[in-house]
Amino acid sequence: MAPVPSIVAPSPDSTITYGAHPDQVYDVRLPSGPARGCTVVVVHGGFWRPEYDRTHAAGQANAFSTTGFHVAAIEYRRAPRGGWPDMSSDVRAALDAVRKNSDLPRPTVLVGHSAGGHLAAWLLHQPEGAGLLGAVSLAGCLDLLLVERLELGDGAARDLLGGEPASDPAGWSAADPAQLGIPPTPLIVLHGTVDERVPLEVSQSYASRFPTPQGRVELQVLDGCTHFDLIDPASRYFAATVDAAMRLTRRT
Image (cartoon, rainbow, N blue to C red; front, side):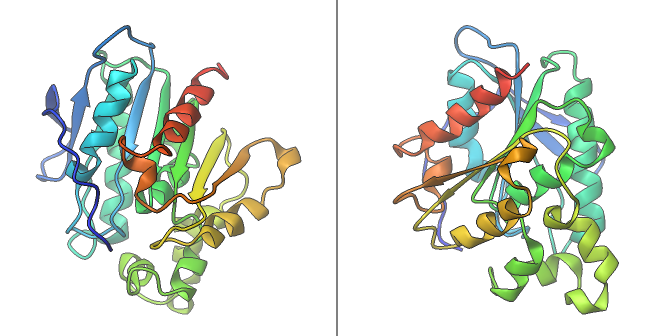
């Protein structure tokens, strides 16, 4: 995976624990201007691996706070130290903790990039996702079987789930947003045409399962956009990321 954007962002306003493990924390950023009364939960990517943590999404999280959102950037245990059982438990617990935090507005939008897009889409189907305004997937790994077939991240999906799909079909199905059916709340899928890490066809494969009349999945293809442009506030494509989150808040 290529280096993430080198964006200098101020430190978060606070870091809150939701469990005993060092990775069971989330960073809070408060609006720097008029508040929108909505919380954006940022779910970072990195092919689910420990080399990448929430700090590489700090610029994105800070940019959301400057547009009036309360922001919670969650951390979670990653493979191979954690693997899917620990990771899935962590993101559910993190979302639950954020939504119970009385200092953060209850209306909540998930925004996940790459592997974080997979986690955000998956969370929509979990009990902790009930009542969310929706989610935004940024170049997300939304179809795990395709991610595996394409060998993205040198077998990242296989490492995440501890083996090939044939070894645990039920486990793969339960972890794969593409196999969980229509999301119960809106999912806006953004993907660039020149993504060098997660090709556009991954989002296209996911979106093709849920045609437009269902009204829950919207695919927006961005011509010339790379993998990291969607989380880089210095990129002209980042405006689409903010706009997607804002559109979900206007659906209330």
